[in-house]
Length: 246
Image 1 (cartoon, rainbow, N blue to C red):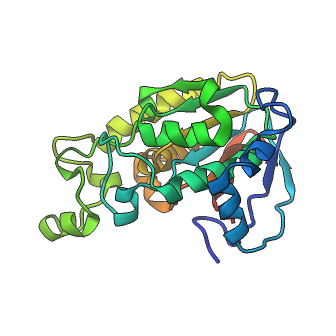
Image 2 (cartoon, helix red, strand yellow; image 1 turned 90 degrees about the vertical axis):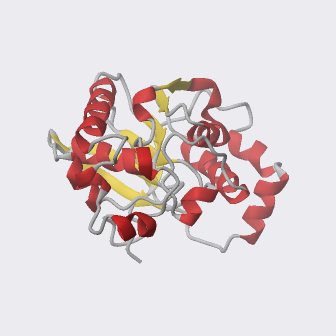
Image 3 (cartoon, rainbow, N blue to C red; image 1 turned 180 degrees about the vertical axis):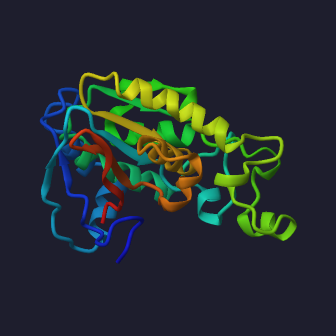
């Protein structure tokens, strides 16, 4: 099964970077196991082999796209419209906690939009969030709430990473925002966690690799997935991309 740039869905192993001192006594995963919806989700989930561990470097950045919303499920472009997670999106966000609680993040950055904040809260990082307006999703302007099929019907060949949105943001404007985010991330004293949105994170990955915003079209990104921005001998690289929880 191919997920984004990964040939195997288990190509991004479980993230391990020391014990997160912010986790509650007894472990966040234990408290989540007592959460009825989460426990039920575990009971219904198919058995899978555990991911092997991965140690993060001090300069690594873990990216999480927020959980499912009604509009992400229907394919409607969701910029500043502040809609909540679906019940399935909340359960998926809860399932992030056992993976992320083992990491010692120096900083946790999050979009101020509710779907990203709620994902971070359910993953166990609500008390540590640094809300960053530069992490808000693309401003889709006149295309807000519309599906790609609806847009293509009036503007054939349209591509957000190349064409931007009327009355919204251009690729260059989004690229400038993520460049500011990257500058802050590279000043950090340890691994960072970023919780944000699909198109925004795809441009962030492209700019991390010194590629233009247009290159974001190559990075497919599902809801509630984990990606790692890293480096290879000093050259910006992807540690993993679009890794699913199961």
